[in-house]
Length: 312
Image 1 (cartoon, rainbow, N blue to C red):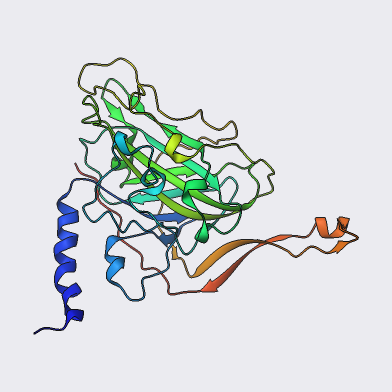
Image 2 (image 1 turned 30 degrees about the horizontal axis):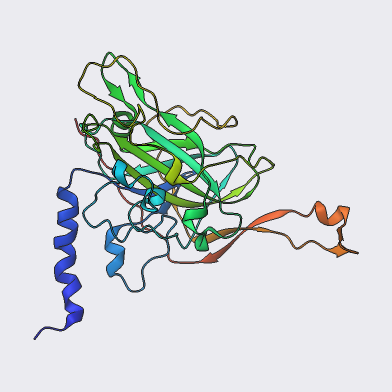
């Protein structure tokens, strides 16, 4: 009888093939300042030890599925099915533009693209996802009505990539980036909209001080919202992007084909505040001015993955 250790080598290609035939993409990686940071891939479940990456794991999504409106009030809505915190974070600065890379996205799955941040108020690697409060930093919906061009189509046309800019005014710290496509191709039907949220850990270095209020991901949308229950094929004249209002400090970014990757991630990052001396229970002025730093610990470098070629 074959050893059980041989089984993953047999079933893994089958499972990954099953994932690929589903027409839905996954947000698979980040690029920050031309540096590639590996996200989560379902195949990592069969690697021992699994790689340490900046993307939250989604071990329950072997069929590359979505969150339907009847599950919008469940923890799966935070960062996808059974999502667990990433073990690393990508270092970014306030004002930086982040590129989110997707596997190929189908042209038929039209809909908005939305981005949120939540301050972990501590290490995101151990964050309780049900307690994260998200504020919206980016949104795009129906881009061009004449050509029926939606944000998801723009993402697909730009090598399956999306750009999001980190607000300059937020306080430094550890944040979760929640990046999402909502597909509307079946949204005319009850429970027909399809949410595809994916999360990444970010270590944000910033001179800002803002702490925007947010809401739990389970409270972002309702099944009856006009941007969720929407008939894509009824000749609509307008579309209301769902979710809370855009954060006042959000920074616009022009979507374009991304630049070349020049490096891969070589460290595991976390935001730390320098130790501050205390005297008689008060922080001294000198200590209050202590610098903040991003620290790293070595890990295996992530491979550069080829960019997906958009469908013609």
